[in-house]
Image (cartoon, rainbow, N blue to C red):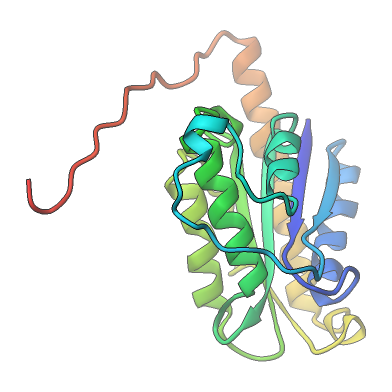
Length: 211
C-alpha cells in the first residue's frame, strides 16, 4: 500500500513539507509507504480548455502534470497539501491539480483517482486554512474518492519549518490523519481479500441548467 503526497509549495522543504514529513513518519510506522511529489517553483500553466487531452490521452503542456498522473496510477491514496496564498491554495497548486484531475477524467483514465482515498492539508502563517481545505477537498469529491479526516481540520501554522514544529496540536493532527488513512487502506485491503467488489460505474450524463 502506497500513498502519494503532493507538496504544492514552491519551497521543497518548507512548512508544507514539514507537515507531510510528519505524516510520512507515521505512515511508515503503520507499514504504509509514501512518496512526496514536489510541484517545484517553475511556472505551471493553467488549463487552456483546448480539449486535446481527450484525444491525446495526456495534456499538451509538459510541465509535470502528465508525469504526476502516470505516477498516480501506482498509488492507493493521495494527500494534497498546499500553503495558503490569499486564503486559497497556491496558484501553482491550483493550476497543476485542475489539469491533473481533468486529464485523468477526459483521457479516460478516471480510475487513476476513483475510489482511492484522499486527504487535504493546509499550511499557513495565520488564516485562510479552512477555505484552502475546502478547495482541495473538491478534487476528491468530484472524483469518487473517500475523504479522510484527522481529529481537527488538517492544518499547521508557522512562518518557518521551525515554527511549524512548535505547532504541537497541528503536528499531532497530522499523525491522527496518517493513522486514519492507514486504517482505511488496511480495511480496503481486507475487503478486497474478502471478496467485496468495488462500486459499479455508469456512463456519466452531462446536463446544464438550460435543459
